[in-house]
Image (cartoon, rainbow, N blue to C red; front, side, top):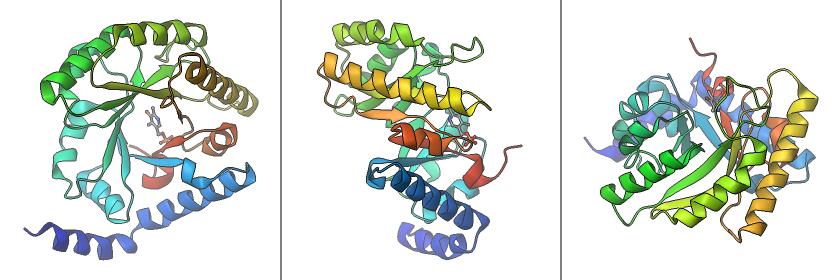
Amino acid sequence: MIPDNDFQDGVSAAEGSPQAASLSQVVQKIRRCAEAAGRDVENIQLIAVSKTRSLAEVKMVAALGQKHFGENTIQDAMTKIPEMADNSLQWHFIGHLQSKKAGKLPGYFQWIHSVDSLKLAQKLSTAMINHSKSSVLNCLIQVNISAEPSKSGLLLAEVKHFLQQLIELDLPCLKWRGLMTIGVKGDEQQTRDAFARLRELQQECRAEFSLDDFDQLSMGMSGDYCLAIEAGATMVRIGTSIFGARE
Ligand SMILES: *Cc1c(COP(=O)(O)O)cnc(C)c1O
C-alpha cells in the first residue's frame, strides 16, 4: 500500500463528511473566541478528542489536516495509533492513568495531560528510558480545580509542592509543560474563575521554578472552550463538537 495514495483518497472522502463541517465550525469558533480575547490563534492548539471513536472516524479527521488527537485509555489508543498512516500526528493522553499501566504509554503518546502522582511520574520516566532514551514525554499536571471528589488531579494548594518534588526527582525523559484541568459543569462564572486561577498558578510556577517550557494550559472542552480561550488556554480538548455525541 502506498501511504500517499491512501492519504489522498482519505482527503476526498473526508471533505464532504459531517466531521469536515463540524471541524471547520470548531476551528472558526476558536478563531472568533481568540480574536474577542485579543489573543493570537496560533497560540491555541486544538486537540481532537477521539476517545471511543472508530479508526475510520479518526482517519477522516486526520485526512482533514487535524494533527493533534486525545485519547483517554491505552487500550482504545493502541487500536488506532499504529494504524494511522501519517506519523506527524501528535497523541495526547488525557485520561486518568494508573501507574502500573505507565509502561504502555511510550511509543504511542507524545503528551500526557494527567500526571497526578509522583509514583506515576517515576513510572513514566522509567518507561520512557526503557523505550528510547532520546525521546521526551511532554507532561502536564492535572489539577482538580473545583475540588470535586469524583475528579482526579491535585488540589490547587498542592501543585507547587508537587512540582518542587518532581524537579528534585530530576526524572529523565519527562518535560514539565504546564497544567490541565476540567471545567465546572454548568456554572459559567465558576468555570471562568477556575480557569483564571489555573492560569495564574501556571504563570507563578513557570516564574518561581524558572521553567521556561512550563507554558501550556490545557483547559476547555466542547461546552466551555470559549471561556477557556478567554482565560488563556493554549490547548483545548474537543470531542463532541467535532465527532458528535458519544454513545
Ligand atoms: C472526553 C474528554 C474531553 C472532550 O470532551 P467533549 O465534551 O466531548 O468535548 C476533554 N477532556 C477530557 C479529559 C475528556 O475526558
